[in-house]
Length: 245
Image (cartoon, rainbow, N blue to C red; front, top):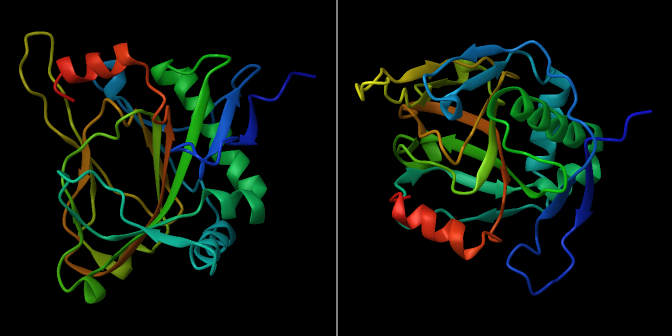
């Protein structure tokens, strides 16, 4: 029997900045990816994959229940320079405890798609799943829900799943940068319209992404960054600075 593609453990040091995260140790071989829609790009790191009906209605209901668990805490840890308007709750610990099969499916899917598209995850890597329940509620926010173009620093794989029927809100279309062709000419940005339960996966550290303003209603998503965490070495930090990231 093939070894599992990952091993989960809690972060060991309560004083560490990542002490509230799980640690995912990569082992074995990546699973075979399911059928997905590919939004191709000239640069491999800008490829985007969409898995339709990734979550069933029952899965979506379970995720809403996790997002409303009384132990879940609202957070406000976005970069000071990022312009956004939404509410966020971190839920990876509760999701792992209450619905381990869903948690494991997320991890396996990220490993499979990375092996097929971006090829950044290697055996022995330690990654940090950061899973968020995010709500753009125009009524509560007092205005449109937004997030400007940005990259998810350190995220090898970012995933977004729509947890609301599209009829519940207006706007909120996912967009991804198109990059440039070999001559340096800018290519058009790409839009992805999700239905409830659909998931989109991309290389969050490299691919700029955003949504159009949520102008009415309530849009809820599950977002995960499979992150290399705050444990980048000095060379990686220097390289990020040199690239202006």
